Length: 116
Image 1 (cartoon, one colour):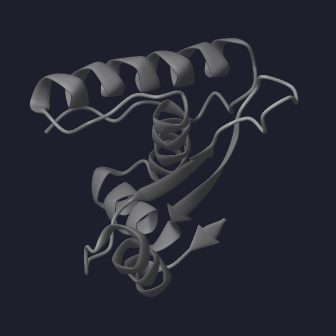
Image 2 (cartoon, one colour):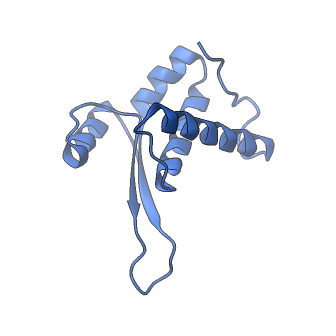
C-alpha cells in the first residue's frame, strides 16, 4: 500500500505505539497450519518520505525502490534494531536493487545515490 506521512503515522501509532512517520512498515503473516508452508505479508510504503528523501538525494526512483526492498527484507525476517543489523540490511537491499537493475527489472536510470 502506498500512503502519505499522515497515514503511516496513524498505522505506526496503532500497531507500534510510535506517533511519528516512518519510511516503511511491514506485516508478515505466518502460514495457516496445515496449509502451504509459505508466508505472506503486507507493505505500507510512505511515498511522502520517499519523495522528500529521494528529491534531497537526487534519486527519487531509487529511494522508492529502496523502501520496497527494505520492506521485503523485513518480511524475510531481517531486523534493524542495531547499527550492525541496519548495515547488514542496507547491504542486502542494495545488492537486490543492483541485481534487479542488471536483470533489466529496473530502469538503467535507477542508480544508487552517492553517499553524503
